[in-house]
Length: 122
Image 1 (cartoon, rainbow, N blue to C red):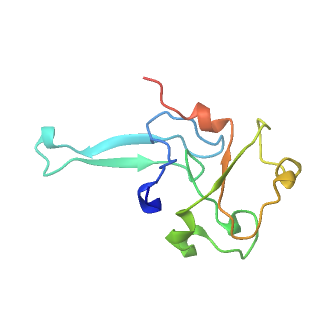
Image 2: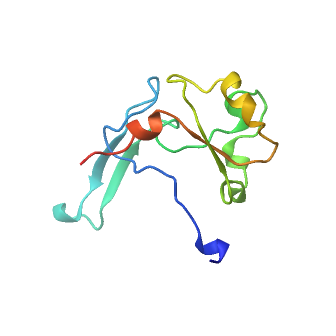
Image 3: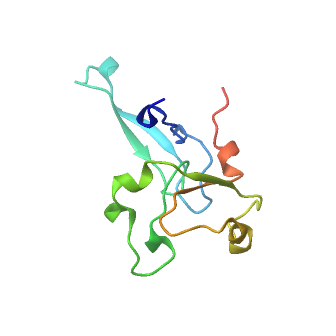
């Protein structure tokens, strides 16, 4: 199989009321324009914290003066990645990831307990 045809989208679906980081705003999706109300199109207002669902933290998240995601090339998010499951229920700690010998430039996806809590159950 051609590698370019072998993609896996790991992003979670965003929905109102989904789990969010405690000090971030809750997820809210509200219609602001609606065809049913004779508006010219359907448009929604989205309120969300940056730590909701699948997200990327820039280096500046913890390091003052570090690069933010707005300066990160999109190509850095596409390609082979390693998934590391985090057992700690509250945070990713150095002691838990040290054994994985993470290298500079390596793509890492952290599977946390939030990975399963954020799935929408219908």
